[in-house]
Image (tube, rainbow, N blue to C red; front, side, top):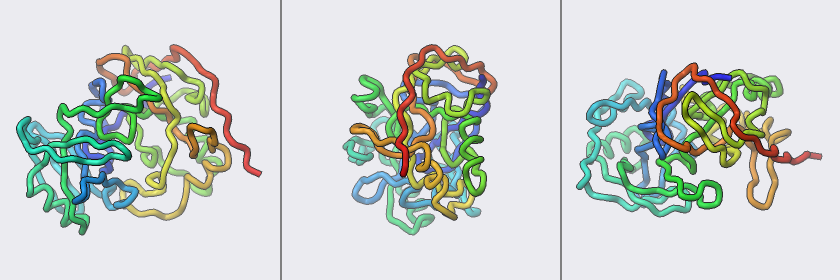
Length: 276
């Protein structure tokens, strides 16, 4: 098995940036989801509510970010450590973010036709799930530092669907090729090059997977409809359709496209619901 692709999403909800190598930090891949848009009440904004975010690219620059989409662009500087902090809400967590510039807020508000603000995490803390990843820190990702997916699992899913979909629908960080379809269900720890990842929770999927990551358009309810037929979990702790695995890095280092992936520990795969 080996790494076939690496991705970061510098601004939560925006288009993926593919890398040849990435630095692994305790919060995940460096620069991944360190910025986030929030509404005027501080609640996070993603493609769930604003699929048009998929039409925006965000590239890391020495000073901060360059955002581009639909022929428009803006350069945004990383806020200083003494920049104002804003209270923000990400799922059920009340956390903070450093306020970006008013110019950045206005640019995104105009692009989305929605009043919003841009915030930067910097070194501000955010704990991952205590239940699944005690003592771990995380960026503005939904819940965990790294998302791992498997090419062969997508291949099996695509065989079952009306039309094949690309891996970008699932917004992974690390894509592994050379495993059997759904082999990741039984992974507990994997080594990616010299990095060890603890596999902590299957990733339940949402409506973002139905959004074309180039156009920002939703054309059907796939892949959710097909996943529901054979990848549905119904347990007291977790309900939803599953694709990919959430992971926590055990230490810092570098991962590269082409790195060898080996299984260091296994676990019993989950029992998926049988639909009548």
